[in-house]
Image 1 (cartoon, one colour):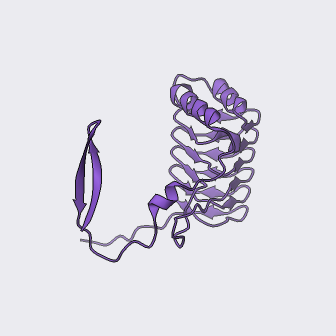
Image 2: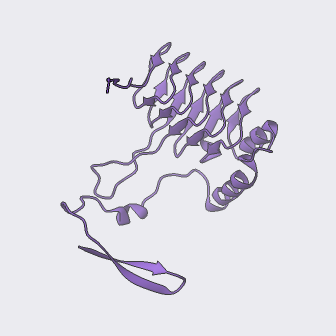
Length: 201
């Protein structure tokens, strides 16, 4: 039995009891909230980016040239001929580098708590996720275990692929739709998702 307080309305708190089975947790998420990572900019810049991203950058009416200009103004390194579609989420633009003539499709998310480096002629298709963040499962205070992501020149991430922290994908590699990449990929490789097992009914 676990008892906690929940706020109902602006001034009223009530006790909430949750029944769970199993052993006591071996990590403290409360301790984790007090620890952070190097965000690279102060709170005013972070808040300004969140506002600009929400109100302008992600909107369908925002032209591509303005998206690139906004990213540059916040410290991103953006090459020539870069195309960034609407609803692309960039967590911290000052931790982003994109080479020439690369494309980022609608709904892609660049969760760059650490640096994301994207080469030239890279295609990141719709709803791909690049996630530089993780946690150390062995840490009692659930410490961050982040790492950069590098996409070398000519990489193609197909729709709804996920690339996890610390991964480098070699030049001219293709990551097929819905694939999960958790380790480095050599150049000129193809990564495919597991195929489903099909049986007659």
